Image (cartoon, rainbow, N blue to C red; front, side):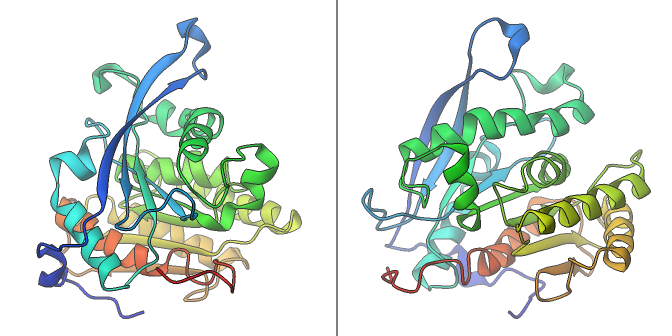
Length: 291
């Protein structure tokens, strides 16, 4: 794939083949201290031509700190135009994109380190089963853990900033058996994190996954070289690459850097543009019909 440093202008043009955006509600039973289910919301993008009888791969896409599930599609509606154009031009696989939140209510008083790690419970127990029993994914509405593991090649996870940290902590370290495509956009552990500890966790996840017959299809790490999270992200992944034989540049791993790129939505939309051109390639059955 050819990486570019600016989003092509045609990705922002109006397109007649428009996907649809739906508000999705579900209950989380993860947080026992609530003594009752916690009602939560997400946004779900369905590609143009979505047919409930035909399965689609699914990307779970997270926002950054201090905002909520509205970020990708409501606060930045041009994200939807980018998706519409990418899929109309067949630059990526038609896919369902779910934009949830790791927060519980007002994000103001919630501990970032805690939520990036603890979200893995809700992701596994509540969000994925709710989404994939409702929409037509390759799980085919069978949300047993066995089937979710069997269909992991049709499931991706990506996020920006604090959502990038959550990509590692919730989806990669704890739920590697449910996902095989990852897009951490801007950071791994934050400015106060332990780099060596993150390297060890990356290596352990990949080594244990290999023992269990679980491979990494692709991890696309993205950052701008003027992003506040760039140095820590690059340092961790450079060290991991040296000691993790399961990370193979260009085969299942790449670190994409935008020269002059900063910690902003322009960069993150470009990261998403690149990630979608990689995710799910080669994972569909040979007899799958083209859309």
